[in-house]
Image (cartoon, rainbow, N blue to C red):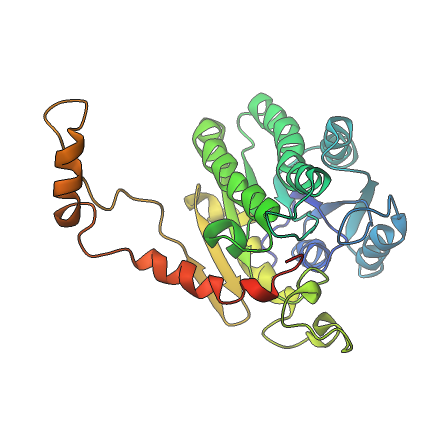
Length: 315
Protein backbone atom coordinates (compact mmCIF):
# COMPACT_ATOMS: atom_id res chain seq x y z
CA UNK A 1 0.00 0.00 0.00
CA UNK A 2 1.29 3.43 -0.93
CA UNK A 3 1.87 6.02 1.78
CA UNK A 4 0.24 9.36 0.94
CA UNK A 5 1.32 11.39 3.98
CA UNK A 6 5.04 10.67 4.15
CA UNK A 7 6.92 13.54 5.78
CA UNK A 8 3.73 15.27 6.97
CA UNK A 9 3.13 16.43 10.53
CA UNK A 10 -0.48 16.16 11.69
CA UNK A 11 -2.43 17.37 14.71
CA UNK A 12 -5.64 15.48 15.50
CA UNK A 13 -7.86 16.91 18.23
CA UNK A 14 -10.26 14.40 19.74
CA UNK A 15 -7.54 11.92 18.81
CA UNK A 16 -8.58 9.36 21.41
CA UNK A 17 -12.21 9.17 20.25
CA UNK A 18 -13.89 6.55 18.12
CA UNK A 19 -13.13 8.33 14.86
CA UNK A 20 -10.18 10.39 16.07
CA UNK A 21 -8.17 7.36 17.15
CA UNK A 22 -8.59 5.78 13.71
CA UNK A 23 -7.51 9.01 12.04
CA UNK A 24 -4.36 9.07 14.17
CA UNK A 25 -3.51 5.42 13.54
CA UNK A 26 -4.13 5.49 9.79
CA UNK A 27 -2.33 8.83 9.40
CA UNK A 28 0.68 7.17 11.04
CA UNK A 29 0.35 4.17 8.71
CA UNK A 30 0.31 6.66 5.83
CA UNK A 31 3.65 8.09 6.97
CA UNK A 32 2.61 11.11 9.05
CA UNK A 33 3.99 12.08 12.44
CA UNK A 34 0.96 12.60 14.69
CA UNK A 35 0.12 14.78 17.68
CA UNK A 36 -2.76 13.07 19.48
CA UNK A 37 -4.67 15.76 21.41
CA UNK A 38 -7.58 14.96 23.71
CA UNK A 39 -8.86 15.21 27.27
CA UNK A 40 -9.78 11.54 27.52
CA UNK A 41 -13.11 12.66 29.01
CA UNK A 42 -16.58 11.18 28.60
CA UNK A 43 -19.03 12.06 25.83
CA UNK A 44 -20.51 14.94 27.83
CA UNK A 45 -17.07 16.34 28.62
CA UNK A 46 -17.72 16.33 32.36
CA UNK A 47 -15.22 13.87 33.85
CA UNK A 48 -12.08 16.00 33.66
CA UNK A 49 -8.77 14.83 32.22
CA UNK A 50 -7.86 11.17 31.74
CA UNK A 51 -4.63 10.54 29.83
CA UNK A 52 -5.15 6.77 29.69
CA UNK A 53 -7.05 6.57 26.41
CA UNK A 54 -4.93 9.28 24.77
CA UNK A 55 -1.63 7.66 25.64
CA UNK A 56 -2.98 4.27 24.55
CA UNK A 57 -3.38 5.60 20.99
CA UNK A 58 0.18 6.95 21.04
CA UNK A 59 1.51 3.64 22.36
CA UNK A 60 -0.32 1.69 19.64
CA UNK A 61 1.12 3.91 16.93
CA UNK A 62 4.65 3.55 18.30
CA UNK A 63 4.27 -0.22 18.65
CA UNK A 64 3.41 -0.37 14.95
CA UNK A 65 6.56 1.62 14.06
CA UNK A 66 4.98 5.06 13.72
CA UNK A 67 5.71 8.36 15.40
CA UNK A 68 3.28 10.06 17.76
CA UNK A 69 3.10 12.21 20.87
CA UNK A 70 0.18 13.12 23.11
CA UNK A 71 -1.12 16.43 24.45
CA UNK A 72 -3.68 16.19 27.26
CA UNK A 73 -5.93 19.21 27.69
CA UNK A 74 -9.06 21.15 26.81
CA UNK A 75 -8.72 22.30 23.21
CA UNK A 76 -11.19 25.15 23.84
CA UNK A 77 -8.64 26.72 26.21
CA UNK A 78 -6.45 29.19 24.30
CA UNK A 79 -3.28 28.13 26.11
CA UNK A 80 -3.94 24.48 25.35
CA UNK A 81 -4.68 25.25 21.70
CA UNK A 82 -1.36 27.05 21.43
CA UNK A 83 0.41 24.20 23.24
CA UNK A 84 -0.98 21.61 20.82
CA UNK A 85 0.33 23.45 17.76
CA UNK A 86 3.62 24.29 19.46
CA UNK A 87 4.11 20.63 20.34
CA UNK A 88 3.88 19.67 16.67
CA UNK A 89 6.36 22.34 15.64
CA UNK A 90 8.83 21.75 18.48
CA UNK A 91 8.68 17.95 18.30
CA UNK A 92 8.57 17.35 14.57
CA UNK A 93 9.78 20.62 13.05
CA UNK A 94 6.57 21.89 11.51
CA UNK A 95 2.88 21.40 10.85
CA UNK A 96 1.08 20.30 7.70
CA UNK A 97 -2.33 18.98 8.76
CA UNK A 98 -4.90 19.98 11.38
CA UNK A 99 -7.90 17.70 11.91
CA UNK A 100 -10.48 18.83 14.48
CA UNK A 101 -12.34 15.66 15.45
CA UNK A 102 -13.07 16.68 19.04
CA UNK A 103 -16.52 17.28 20.49
CA UNK A 104 -19.02 16.60 23.24
CA UNK A 105 -22.75 15.91 23.36
CA UNK A 106 -25.24 17.40 25.81
CA UNK A 107 -28.67 16.67 24.35
CA UNK A 108 -31.83 18.48 25.31
CA UNK A 109 -34.87 19.96 23.55
CA UNK A 110 -34.63 23.73 23.16
CA UNK A 111 -37.27 24.41 25.81
CA UNK A 112 -35.33 22.31 28.33
CA UNK A 113 -31.79 23.27 27.35
CA UNK A 114 -29.76 24.78 30.19
CA UNK A 115 -27.22 27.55 29.82
CA UNK A 116 -24.45 25.14 30.80
CA UNK A 117 -25.53 22.62 28.15
CA UNK A 118 -25.57 25.33 25.50
CA UNK A 119 -22.36 27.10 26.48
CA UNK A 120 -20.37 23.93 27.10
CA UNK A 121 -21.27 22.35 23.77
CA UNK A 122 -20.75 25.45 21.64
CA UNK A 123 -17.49 26.19 23.44
CA UNK A 124 -16.10 22.69 22.98
CA UNK A 125 -17.00 22.36 19.32
CA UNK A 126 -16.65 25.85 17.93
CA UNK A 127 -14.11 27.60 20.13
CA UNK A 128 -12.15 24.35 20.15
CA UNK A 129 -11.74 24.70 16.39
CA UNK A 130 -10.85 28.39 16.68
CA UNK A 131 -8.00 27.97 19.17
CA UNK A 132 -5.89 25.48 17.25
CA UNK A 133 -6.77 27.02 13.88
CA UNK A 134 -5.58 30.44 15.05
CA UNK A 135 -2.15 29.20 16.07
CA UNK A 136 -1.82 26.89 13.07
CA UNK A 137 -2.69 29.83 10.79
CA UNK A 138 -0.05 32.01 12.45
CA UNK A 139 2.53 29.34 11.68
CA UNK A 140 1.41 28.85 8.08
CA UNK A 141 1.35 32.60 7.50
CA UNK A 142 4.98 32.76 8.63
CA UNK A 143 5.95 29.67 6.60
CA UNK A 144 4.32 30.84 3.38
CA UNK A 145 5.85 28.16 1.18
CA UNK A 146 4.76 25.22 3.34
CA UNK A 147 0.96 25.34 3.00
CA UNK A 148 -1.41 23.32 5.11
CA UNK A 149 -4.64 21.38 5.41
CA UNK A 150 -7.49 22.02 7.87
CA UNK A 151 -10.28 19.46 8.19
CA UNK A 152 -13.26 20.03 10.49
CA UNK A 153 -15.93 17.57 11.55
CA UNK A 154 -19.48 18.80 11.06
CA UNK A 155 -22.68 16.75 11.23
CA UNK A 156 -26.03 16.14 9.63
CA UNK A 157 -27.29 18.01 12.70
CA UNK A 158 -25.32 21.06 11.56
CA UNK A 159 -26.43 20.78 7.94
CA UNK A 160 -30.09 19.91 8.45
CA UNK A 161 -30.73 20.44 12.17
CA UNK A 162 -31.60 17.98 14.93
CA UNK A 163 -34.60 18.48 17.19
CA UNK A 164 -32.99 17.31 20.43
CA UNK A 165 -29.61 18.90 19.74
CA UNK A 166 -30.01 22.68 19.26
CA UNK A 167 -26.60 23.41 20.81
CA UNK A 168 -24.85 20.68 18.82
CA UNK A 169 -26.59 21.73 15.59
CA UNK A 170 -25.69 25.40 16.04
CA UNK A 171 -22.06 24.62 16.83
CA UNK A 172 -21.68 22.38 13.78
CA UNK A 173 -23.25 24.93 11.46
CA UNK A 174 -20.90 27.49 12.99
CA UNK A 175 -17.98 25.31 11.96
CA UNK A 176 -19.10 25.58 8.34
CA UNK A 177 -18.99 29.36 8.53
CA UNK A 178 -15.54 29.20 10.08
CA UNK A 179 -14.43 26.69 7.46
CA UNK A 180 -15.52 28.94 4.59
CA UNK A 181 -13.90 31.97 6.19
CA UNK A 182 -10.62 30.06 6.54
CA UNK A 183 -10.79 28.87 2.94
CA UNK A 184 -10.93 32.48 1.75
CA UNK A 185 -8.49 34.02 4.23
CA UNK A 186 -5.78 31.35 4.09
CA UNK A 187 -5.82 30.52 0.38
CA UNK A 188 -2.92 32.92 -0.28
CA UNK A 189 -0.78 30.86 2.12
CA UNK A 190 -1.51 27.56 0.39
CA UNK A 191 -3.87 26.40 3.14
CA UNK A 192 -7.10 24.56 2.36
CA UNK A 193 -10.03 24.10 4.74
CA UNK A 194 -12.80 21.54 4.30
CA UNK A 195 -15.36 19.78 6.46
CA UNK A 196 -16.72 16.26 6.60
CA UNK A 197 -20.09 15.10 7.90
CA UNK A 198 -19.45 11.51 9.00
CA UNK A 199 -21.94 8.76 9.73
CA UNK A 200 -20.56 5.98 11.90
CA UNK A 201 -21.14 4.20 15.18
CA UNK A 202 -19.28 5.76 18.13
CA UNK A 203 -19.82 6.60 21.80
CA UNK A 204 -21.85 9.62 20.65
CA UNK A 205 -24.23 7.65 18.47
CA UNK A 206 -24.59 5.07 21.25
CA UNK A 207 -26.78 7.72 22.89
CA UNK A 208 -29.13 7.96 19.90
CA UNK A 209 -32.86 7.37 19.75
CA UNK A 210 -32.57 3.92 18.17
CA UNK A 211 -30.36 2.54 20.93
CA UNK A 212 -32.09 0.21 23.37
CA UNK A 213 -31.38 1.04 26.98
CA UNK A 214 -30.88 -2.60 27.98
CA UNK A 215 -28.88 -3.58 24.90
CA UNK A 216 -25.10 -3.45 24.28
CA UNK A 217 -23.90 -0.18 22.70
CA UNK A 218 -23.94 -0.54 18.87
CA UNK A 219 -20.39 0.83 18.61
CA UNK A 220 -19.09 -2.37 20.23
CA UNK A 221 -20.19 -4.41 17.21
CA UNK A 222 -19.44 -1.86 14.46
CA UNK A 223 -16.02 -3.22 13.44
CA UNK A 224 -15.99 -4.40 9.85
CA UNK A 225 -19.47 -3.09 9.10
CA UNK A 226 -20.61 0.00 7.21
CA UNK A 227 -20.92 1.73 10.60
CA UNK A 228 -17.25 1.21 11.50
CA UNK A 229 -15.68 4.64 12.25
CA UNK A 230 -12.55 3.44 10.46
CA UNK A 231 -14.50 3.88 7.21
CA UNK A 232 -14.49 7.64 7.67
CA UNK A 233 -10.71 7.98 7.37
CA UNK A 234 -9.92 7.50 3.61
CA UNK A 235 -11.51 10.81 2.54
CA UNK A 236 -9.64 12.55 5.37
CA UNK A 237 -6.36 11.10 4.11
CA UNK A 238 -7.15 12.44 0.64
CA UNK A 239 -8.08 15.90 1.92
CA UNK A 240 -4.88 15.96 4.01
CA UNK A 241 -2.62 14.95 1.11
CA UNK A 242 -0.88 17.04 -1.52
CA UNK A 243 -3.52 15.92 -4.01
CA UNK A 244 -6.21 17.31 -1.71
CA UNK A 245 -5.12 20.88 -2.41
CA UNK A 246 -7.72 21.06 -5.20
CA UNK A 247 -10.56 21.16 -2.65
CA UNK A 248 -11.24 24.00 -0.24
CA UNK A 249 -14.35 25.42 1.37
CA UNK A 250 -16.34 22.24 0.69
CA UNK A 251 -18.39 19.78 2.74
CA UNK A 252 -18.14 16.01 2.25
CA UNK A 253 -20.46 13.35 3.60
CA UNK A 254 -18.96 9.97 4.39
CA UNK A 255 -20.23 6.62 5.60
CA UNK A 256 -19.27 3.00 5.02
CA UNK A 257 -19.98 2.59 1.32
CA UNK A 258 -20.38 6.16 0.20
CA UNK A 259 -18.59 9.51 -0.04
CA UNK A 260 -20.65 12.49 -1.12
CA UNK A 261 -19.90 16.11 -2.01
CA UNK A 262 -22.52 18.58 -0.80
CA UNK A 263 -23.73 21.41 -3.00
CA UNK A 264 -23.12 24.87 -1.60
CA UNK A 265 -25.92 27.34 -0.63
CA UNK A 266 -27.29 29.14 -3.68
CA UNK A 267 -29.90 31.83 -4.20
CA UNK A 268 -32.75 29.68 -5.45
CA UNK A 269 -35.40 32.28 -6.35
CA UNK A 270 -35.46 36.06 -6.72
CA UNK A 271 -38.15 38.73 -6.34
CA UNK A 272 -37.06 42.18 -7.53
CA UNK A 273 -38.46 45.63 -6.85
CA UNK A 274 -37.62 48.89 -8.66
CA UNK A 275 -37.57 50.68 -5.31
CA UNK A 276 -35.48 49.66 -2.28
CA UNK A 277 -38.52 49.37 0.00
CA UNK A 278 -40.89 46.67 -1.17
CA UNK A 279 -44.53 47.68 -1.43
CA UNK A 280 -45.95 45.35 1.21
CA UNK A 281 -49.26 44.73 -0.58
CA UNK A 282 -47.39 43.94 -3.80
CA UNK A 283 -45.07 41.59 -1.90
CA UNK A 284 -48.09 39.58 -0.71
CA UNK A 285 -49.59 39.66 -4.22
CA UNK A 286 -46.46 38.57 -6.07
CA UNK A 287 -45.23 35.99 -3.57
CA UNK A 288 -47.14 32.92 -4.90
CA UNK A 289 -45.73 33.41 -8.42
CA UNK A 290 -42.17 34.31 -7.39
CA UNK A 291 -40.51 33.18 -4.14
CA UNK A 292 -43.44 30.87 -3.43
CA UNK A 293 -43.43 29.20 -6.83
CA UNK A 294 -42.81 25.48 -6.65
CA UNK A 295 -43.52 25.25 -2.93
CA UNK A 296 -40.96 24.52 -0.25
CA UNK A 297 -39.45 21.03 -0.53
CA UNK A 298 -37.37 21.61 2.61
CA UNK A 299 -40.62 21.75 4.58
CA UNK A 300 -41.06 18.05 3.91
CA UNK A 301 -37.72 17.34 5.55
CA UNK A 302 -38.68 19.40 8.58
CA UNK A 303 -42.01 17.58 8.77
CA UNK A 304 -40.26 14.21 8.61
CA UNK A 305 -37.88 15.27 11.36
CA UNK A 306 -40.79 16.32 13.54
CA UNK A 307 -42.06 12.74 13.55
CA UNK A 308 -39.21 11.73 15.87
CA UNK A 309 -39.42 14.75 18.15
CA UNK A 310 -41.67 12.90 20.58
CA UNK A 311 -38.77 10.55 21.33
CA UNK A 312 -36.02 13.18 21.34
CA UNK A 313 -33.69 13.40 24.37
CA UNK A 314 -34.84 15.65 27.15
CA UNK A 315 -38.35 16.07 25.77
